[in-house]
Image (cartoon, rainbow, N blue to C red; front, side, top):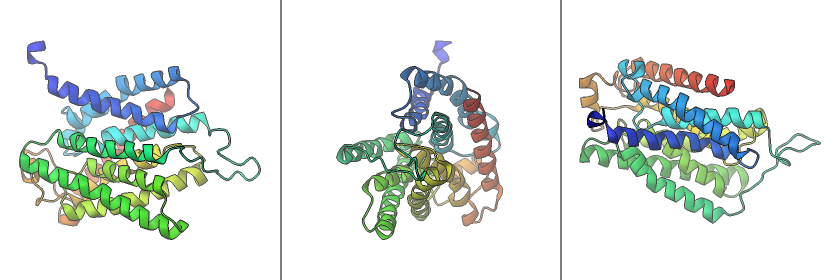
Length: 298
């Protein structure tokens, strides 16, 4: 019934679905057949994304209980990150990543940091559309733009200071990933948190991405060339949980969400108790299980 078809929602979900699938490519880079990646992307696009996106945005059970993920920390980034983690683990590391004698990881740096930086800045610019596309008013859009600026900026600076202290000089590539981590983390709560919440979310994201890379390299022995798991999976989880901590009625639109029943309450740190936080945890665990089980079977 094309006369009743919601073209806007279709295109909106089309590009979000594509984003979910492309996250995987970074973690599986340099050791994956193109056909295998096509099959992997088809499974994500045809089976995983439509199900969990319906749960969250299509009137499914998560939306009915008040779960909130404005632009996809959970539905897009966490799902793509989990799929990337499973794929990278199954593939094994690149040749030369781990020492044959000691088993310790070797850094295989990117060959062109300026081009990498350009890619990050293109993504950051695009993220204003990514997060702002669903805004319902100019006031909402302004608030979303503000939090979408604060979180990655804080994450980048925090990562710069941390790596400067830890390694003796700032790690540029890690700081670039921290920018993306801050963007991923703010994607779910960008419309329901204020500037203070965005600052705290960014601080945690900037540190979490460093910890995530260390965890994968030294403990899980998963070779992730671009840090996709640390950026998207771990910070997607953090952003989903952050909604339950930092949602506040001082953010435009929250009162309307509460009045309509599409949100379960405000965050724990803003007097809302554990209700919304509990719902966010249920949602993130359910979506994570759906993605992990499906991709493991594939």
